[in-house]
Amino acid sequence: MRQAKQVCKEMLIGLAIWVAGVGIILTILATHRLAAIAGVIVGGAVAAGIILHMYRHLDIALDMDAKHAQKHVQAAAFQRMFFMAAAVGVSFVLSGYIHPLGVILSLFGIKVTALFNPVLHKYLT
Image 1: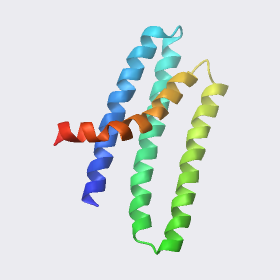
Image 2 (image 1 turned 60 degrees about the vertical axis):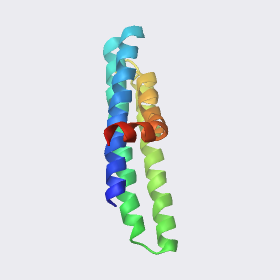
Image 3 (image 1 turned 90 degrees about the horizontal axis):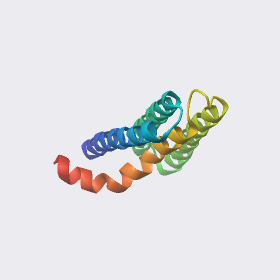
């Protein structure tokens, strides 16, 4: 489980780098800069919560038998998808305050950090 904790920390560091980059680029390009920054912050917070949720529920599922673990993992995946969809939906409803592109790009950071985790791991260790 120590290795999973290390990967979780690396994913959060990678996400912070991604969110900072997206925030800088959107601040330069967006017409409503405050909404763009709010979108990046909201998306980054939800993405960080999703990474921590994955770590926590992986630990829980490893202590279960196979049948219950599969159901638990599926329920946890549904919860993560619900929160991602809710964040994007709220950003579309409140697009004057929270820019949807910032939320979507920040949530996309989960995938980006998963792909670049081996590179980040090499530099952090």
